[in-house]
Amino acid sequence: MTPILEIENVSKRFTKKLDAAGKIAARLGANIREETVHAVDNVSMSIMPGEVLGLVGESGCGKSTLGRVVAGIHPPSAGQLHLDGTPINDLSAQDKRRANLDIQMIFQDPSSSLNPRMRVEDIISEAPRMHKMVSGASETSDFVDDLMRKVGLDPVMKRRYPHQFSGGQRQRIGIARALAVKPRFLVCDEAIAALDVSIQAQVINLFADLREDLGLTYLFISHDLSVVQHITDRVAIMYLGRIVEIAPTDDIFSTPRHPYTRALLDQVPRLDQRKQDFTPIRGEIPSPLDPPTGCHFHPRCPHATDLCRQNAPQLSTVLSGHMASCHHLETLGV
Ligand SMILES: Nc1ncnc2c1ncn2[C@@H]1O[C@H](COP(=O)(O)OP(=O)(O)O)[C@@H](O)[C@H]1O
Ligand SMILES: [Mg+2]
Image (cartoon, rainbow, N blue to C red):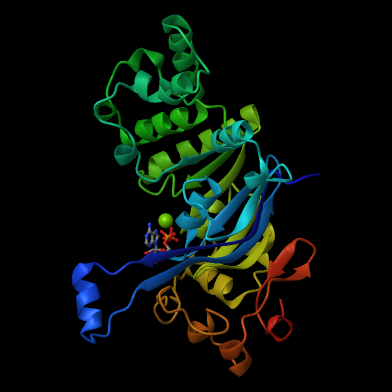
């Protein structure tokens, strides 16, 4: 089977240019330079049609940036994306436009991504009208009603404004807006993180239902491993711009191999643990402006050796479908 999406050696760097004052100060000998953030560092992975892939890691590790590259919001600095086996860059202009609609993004904060001055019906129908996917008042009205029902909203509310809805309902509006252009792939970036805990499960269920009904594929981004446990088929663990482990979800939770994944799992409170003694990962997450040499995790890793300080480990297969990047996988055991 061909992956719906293949991420091939994708990197994304942001360079912060010096402003006028900075340029003058630099010329006068001040120690300021242009700074480059390596937000995503040579990531490769593929996602199969209908799959739900989780992307997990601490804040600032590059999850949103990778999601935005996948959704076509940021062009990659290096590497490329393949859709259905074809590099997106090689597509005709028309196919590229369709590819852009095929992959839609759902954001964390529905309030800030919905225009407060637009009625819900206009928010939902804006993109399909622009792309001539619907025309005429009655067709548009039916289209909006149908989408609102699909995401669990009552169409009688379609003339209301976003502030007249609850947080969970606003996220449903955001989902309806994304679905309006008939995407095949959703990038959900912390899509439930801003919601009340009681509402989170409802929105997760909605994602699961939509997957069944519409055959959607998901890249499900979260800083919280426990959130992805029940919804994903596979999980990729990201640390400082790189994927350090990727495996079927059950394997990530039962037999994590990378020391970073193990540390993340230690932070997840488990029902079967009466005593909740958290062992937070020691040290701070280093700055992506100045990442550590070798394995990015070595300054925080209890198993680090000189090899780890000098050479970056590659992702290698530990079991069919389970890959991890660590120099000491053999000695660490299962
Ligand atoms: N548009 C941008 N311009 C400059 N730096 C950015 C931009 N977006 C993200 N970054 C930087 O890239 C790194 C990764 O950020 P992000 O992808 O948002 O991480 P995450 O979603 O995992 O919290 C951070 O250091 C962040 O400051
Ligand atoms: Mg983010």
